Amino acid sequence: MSIDSQIKEMLDLAKKDNLKVKEVREESHSAKASLGRPVFNQMITDIENGIFTRILTWAPDRLSRNAGDLGRLVDLMDQNKLLQIKTYSQMFSNNPNEKFLLMILCSQAKLENDQKGLNVKRGLRAKCEMGWRPEPAPLGYVNIMKGNRIEWIDIDPERAPIVTQMFRRVANRGHSGRIIKKWLDTIGFTTKNGKKLSLSRIYATLKNSFYTGKFQFNGMWYTGKHQPLTTKEIFNKVQLQLVVPPKEWHKKDISV
Image 1: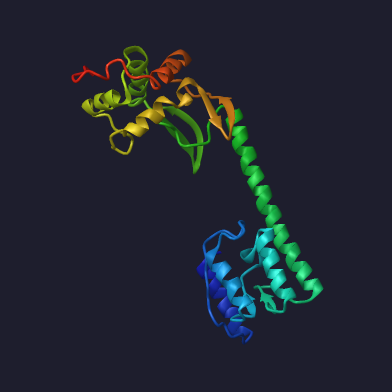
Image 2: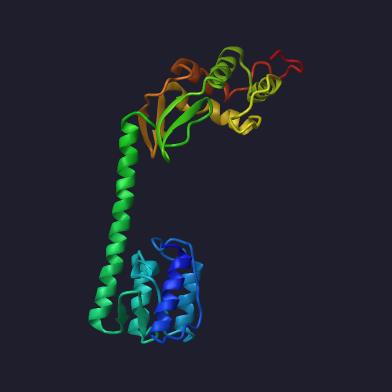
């Protein structure tokens, strides 16, 4: 449910049970990370200072899906500063059984969250092992989508030949990034968004091993199934050129 829907349901529940709601606070930050929610942290401080003694929330996992925040809530209960947590279907007070149940439910939410993270990482790793990098395609390629998911990466027929020329000009003619930019601007080259290529984007492109058919993801190297736009030999020559003064750097007029 959306946050607005949760608030509406809980206000209706409060009215039905004759509960006085002193203040409504909402926060879009995820409950999976400890200390990362300013509104939640302020609520904890206000409970410590005696401003509030009860919490009305949609479900336990809205309060915590991490051990740190769960411990803070239980500690406030132990100090008799937090007298009750009421959800849409349950109530937790300062007694051993209800606190234990609260910890179980929040810990279960943390377990599900951790497992979801592992499943995502496993899926991304499997995608890489199949030869497809699970990220937006770099310059010269396009993402082939299936719904909201990247299915594979294909050649951008308009920009791929230009990217190949970029590598060859640096490797064989000693062109610098600035010379490459001058050439690209002269021929009217733009990204898919219609923007000119910045100097930093040019250098990032020239340093990206993806164009040789290899790519790195989460610290691991994989062989891609996409079509390379340059050879490993040319790529290595480019890397050497990028760390030495360009051959034509001193000339004022350079043929592009």
